[in-house]
Length: 270
Image 1 (cartoon, rainbow, N blue to C red):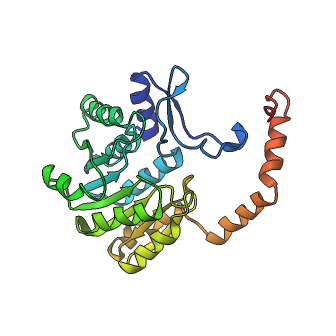
Image 2: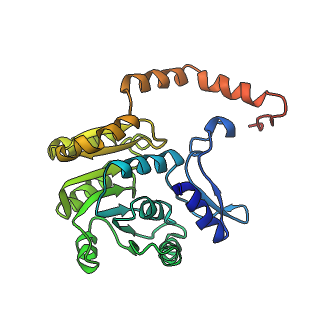
Image 3: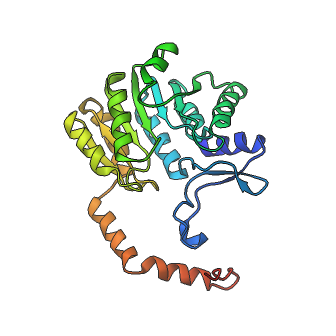
C-alpha cells in the first residue's frame, strides 16, 4: 500500500483532518500548500509542516533502489516523516528526535510512539533530544546506529544544519546518505555543498521536491541511488528557466486565469 494512503488512514483514525499535496495555484499562490498540515476542529494542530506528497514519493523510489539499516531523523514534529520512513523502509530501524520547543511537539513524540505501537511498527522510536548535543547519548542508550541514512529536518539555518551534520558525522556509517529538507526554501544549498566538498561527498539538489531537498552522497552509493536522485533533480538550467518564467509573471497570469474560470471562487480582496 502506498505510504500516503496508509498515512492518511493512520492520522484520520486519530481524529485529524489532513492538508497535503495542494497546488499553490489552486490556493491563491500559498507556497506552503504542498506540505502536510494536521487540523483539528478547523484549526492547525502544529506550527510545523510535514514533508510533501512528492517527497513521500521520493523516499518510496529510493527504497526500491537501496536498503538502509539505521535511519536518523532530526526533527519529528507530529511524526509524519518518521511514520512514513518506518513504513517505506520496513527493514530499517528508524529513530526520530525532536527538541520539543514548538507547539504540540512533545505530544507529537507521544503520538509517534503510540502510532508505532498501534500499527505494529516495531522499527520506529521517537525520543526527545537536541542535536547535536544529545546524539551520542541517544545512540548509545537505544543501541542505534551507525546511521546509514540521516534526514536533517530541524532548525533551518546554515549554522544549525552545519552543527547537525558535524554532530552526526562520527556516528554515521562511512557510506551514509545525508538528506536535507527545505534546503532550497531556506537558502541552505551553499552550506550543504561546502560540507560535502569538505567530506568528499557528492552534492545534489533535488529541484523536483517542493521543499528543494538536497543530499550528500558517498561515492560507494552512487551506482545504486543516482537514477533516483536524477529523477528528482533533473537539469539545474531547466529549473532556472522555469524560475525565470515565474519571475516574469507566468504564475500570476495562471492564477488569475484559474480564479476567473466559471464556477471558481474569486480571489479574496486584500
